[in-house]
Amino acid sequence: MICILLVVIWVVNLCRRQLHLFTLCDDQLSANISEVGSPIGVMAIDFGSRARFRLNGKILIPPGDRGFRMEVSETFPNCPKYIQRRKIVGIGDDGLGPGIPVRSNSLSLELQDVVSKADTMFVATYYEQTGADISHRGGFPGFIRVLNENELMWPV
Image 1 (cartoon, rainbow, N blue to C red):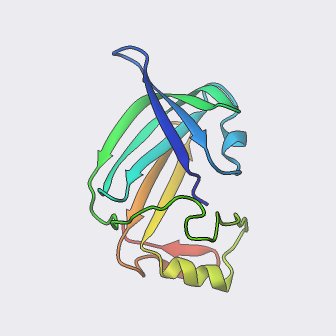
Image 2 (cartoon, one colour):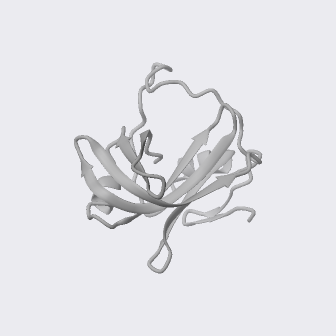
């Protein structure tokens, strides 16, 4: 599940960057970043212009009714290669509304089919020594190979 974030940037001073983020989904994000100092990785991507950048940092104010705040320690601009240009419509503009999250330890045959036709995916990682990170991967439909219900393969 991709969690949509609304981002408002506050510049506290010239040396510190802070983001205030608001989530528009009900997932495990809040539970995983509930403590001050929790590492977080965020990706900002504009599919219309194909611009993207990654932000890594730590939680300053844990999630609540007014979102959460992070201190940005690293930012990485990324090239637009493999980003498919798209026009994003608002939630429900297609008459379908937001999807229902699916949590599973394996991919059903239906989900394997969906994944094998995708042209975009996101990979989120966490290592205690370096913190949290997120990356975009993209290509022509079929660039993600489904090996079985528990394994995927894609080009590096």
